[in-house]
Length: 184
Image (tube, rainbow, N blue to C red; front, side, top):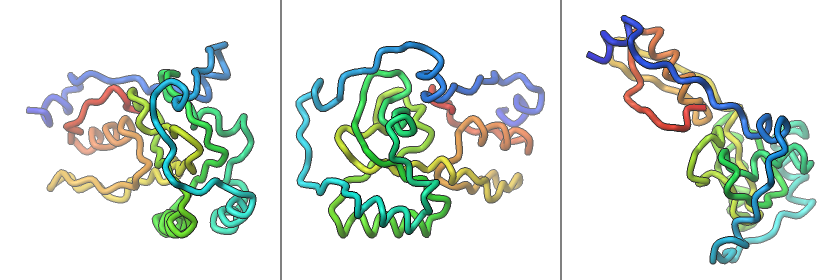
């Protein structure tokens, strides 16, 4: 039934959600209080990010995929609805699972907390750092590696946006059996 509805075009199309960075820059929306100040949460026994850590991340990813400027990382520290905010000082943008593994190995050795983040379009604030965690943005890992129209199996990287996956599945006569408010 879903396959036939997709082929007739009778399924609802969802418009993509604009990125928070664009939304914040185009409006004068108030920046929310830090999550740690609004809720009774305590920071774990993790190390704080140092300049040496930044240098290590740059050696893994190159400088252009290690964001440290406040204007570049603001959108990664605030959720889509603008209700929660962390204060991470670094956003890492790997392109491969090998880079993710190297980053995670290093963060584990240094006891650095990590906050993985997909499109940051979630509506519950779960992908936003609470404290000063290293944000591991998976945005650049957005490749669809395979769609098998016979088995209905889609293989993709971790940073794929649900709306894009749905569009590509529909092109093959398939339907994404998932409908979240956060489609990207």
